[in-house]
Length: 239
Image (cartoon, rainbow, N blue to C red):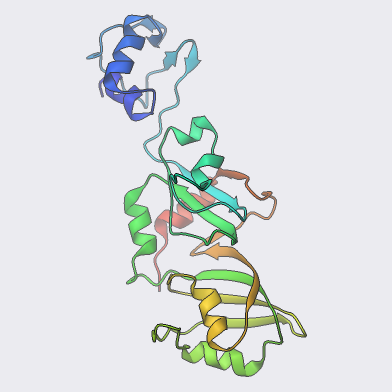
């Protein structure tokens, strides 16, 4: 790979910007000063430094975020703060994007990556990747509701949802529940409860496919997936 292409791909500027860095003597390969943009480098074997700092090359990046409320699941927005705005520059330069979306006021597990193939596989309607949510409901959730969700409920636009697995954790004037669905319709969890005359007061995604939210992550915090998590994710096949 050409050194100018590698640095440009990592977000250190355009090819023109990178050529200036090279001309200024900012780049070394294996401690050897490099000024030729056409110089080839093996990212797996060679050590590249920029202003004395080692440049870490990755083709893909996989991040788990505990999305906070008030932030939208997008890469950019003129008016709202996005999940990408929460990233450190060292991660943002890989241009990761959220896999799917969580509503602005919804918290919890969000995967960010620049691996488009993986994103497509996880979001494809044909794959039916399960997503589990914890929610607080404004009134009592009953066994009748469990059966209704299992059969599928009719949303406000006439769409009948696929079967959802509803578990009652605590029932009363306010109920704590977990709901697993295999679709990703707009505001789906909220609309499913609206379909049975109830309202979601709090919503948090706790798992997606083989990934489970790391509960040690504070709201707005994120980390790279562990090797075990990444292996499970890349090998994941929906039954």
